[in-house]
Image 1: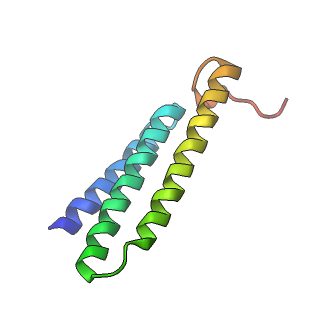
Image 2: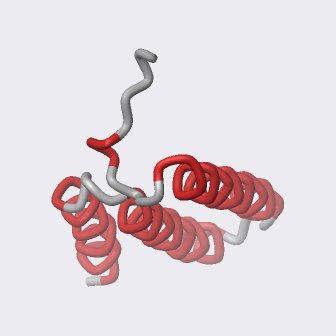
Length: 93
């Protein structure tokens, strides 16, 4: 039953990520939701198997770095272009 809940959380995050591809902030929020659902899933399976939680600390560290990088990109994009629309970016000039 919990496996279906974890799968639903993950795929709903992917669904929102694919629908809200025009705004960077909404994409970042859905990516963080996906990471959170993966973390809950891994925590459940690691705690059930009695393994060590060291891998979860590495996963959380990498997800925090991903979130900080995404926020830095969002801030620089808003400062340069004035909005967070992905389609308004042109990297060719």
